[in-house]
Length: 484
Image (cartoon, rainbow, N blue to C red):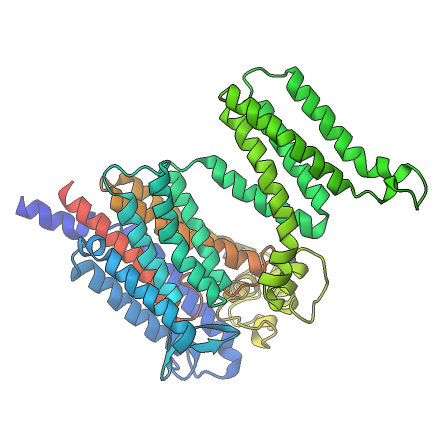
């Protein structure tokens, strides 16, 4: 048995495909960091006076951490230490607000001489560990209110503190944990509800609250029709008729009377809200009598929709900061500002577009060489790939990320231990959210919120965080493979 244990320890228990993908990504990142700053004058990629040389140091220390986690730290340590580590990170998250240094409007960094440390990055590790610990407990059920609230508390507390640091990007990553909850039995309807809420928020800003409410009502009618066992009935027909009439309401009010008439001064939104307020109790009673949970939830959704459209103005103007509002306005096409807040994205898209199919070649990117894209070695590293490696290079990089995420999920599903499986999904969710947001903002599909591309962007905090997360999972996976 000892021989079998030893053989499986290195040859078969470690997922080398995952390790090799990780190594390829950090190598690609290091090369592109050098490409993004080579015009500043580094003598070589190992010049420690520039970011390329410093990143090499971060890579070596990250590999040291990986070896420490794999071969020194007991794999069982992470589950037992998850709660103390979570509490320590929370203390650091709060402390940095008062003791940290401000960088680009965000007070989220501790500074120790030439080294900066961001607790928000570490919190992804500790939150993932505690979430895996809580959700792997015997008898845990995500659809039970107590367990759902405990899960929400584990995710929500650090997320809110990070928002208090003005680190919107890092806080947004926590939304990815909903995919972990879905894997463990969380209703998909909640995910759909979040998507609809985001859609209504955008429609309220770009179109009107009336349009947002009409879209919500249309979605609810369609869902109730699909949920009904019969293909079509009188109630659905009436709902569709009412929807059509409500859609014509603004036009109808505009056609009646003169400009000064009372009817033409009636706002269609208020008429719609009045109809909804009268209809909701009827549908609640109907849902209760027929024990139809779907109808009851639809009625409650309408009330939530009303609350949302009337709170958008407050959220947008009073909660979001000025630079965040401007970025959202540019993203949604509400304002054009190619030389202001939209400058980064505009230059990034020019860089990516100019790369064509195969790119301009290593160190030959003009946007990169002349420094037209700010933060190109950090948040906008992907546009360096796009300009110098072209569409095919971008495709290779994204394919590596997709493989990395898929491999994490695949390995997680092979695990018998619920803790290992859930933690693996947490790692995959964090990487996916970073990838989605970062690439989205470099091509103009997401607002610029300052979030690094995992393993590629310059910076020790981010590289260490993802290295630790990936190799904790590899260590847990290896522990299982030793015995099963």
